Image 1 (cartoon, rainbow, N blue to C red):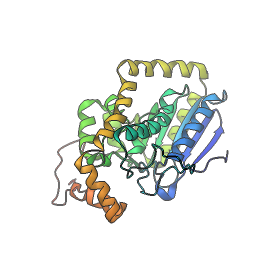
Image 2: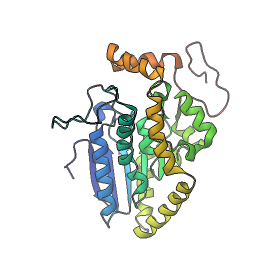
Image 3: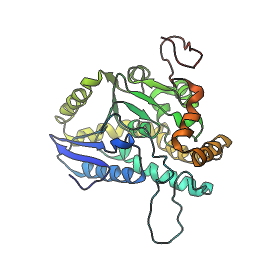
Image 4: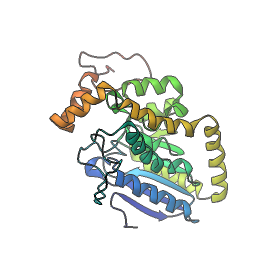
Length: 301
């Protein structure tokens, strides 16, 4: 299926495979990519031959996060003033909430569709990449994957908040308050992922799970996915996602966020990101044992 520009989509053997396909941008999530992902998810959900869906990334990683390029914005071209625009457009708070909710509606398809979705995570799964992965029904990661939300350091709050439901309040705070990352193996230990496997076995692991799901009646899969997700909704999961988008707009008003946006305009995105992360050393959290660091902030093994 070749009607998409930023994803690759195929149906085979009772499954749909969706690949985020901007490898030159480390699969950064643009609005157009999210629109294509949303369309493919609902198309796969409509196909009775599909029992389950897997999402993965082309190239070196799953996804490095949202596209923060100041030039990345939706261009409609009809001359009308619109709420949309990018992070640097200085919107009103309601316009910002509207924009964040638009992206969230596209991502929530992962939670809402009837078919189970597996996130197959390798390399970096950062920021918006985690918003995709953690809305999936199961997350299978490579041992050496790198998972976290570094933009929480100075760019706002998380526009989706599934961390709490996966790892509980303490690890959710430890990782999102600092933007530090964990490895795939550590992510599996704390419940951020279902399991981790060596990178060279990741695809085999996911395809084996898809093989097993293909043996189950798709309507039964839907019933069992739905009751678990309804249970999460009774614990407030859907309401919290709505609040996460609004809270991110609030956080965009923080002085630190303004400093970051000004740095991007003045120095460029790469330099601004380098400035942000300089004080955090290797940017890692440690799940097991003490966090002893060298003078550059890097964990000492």
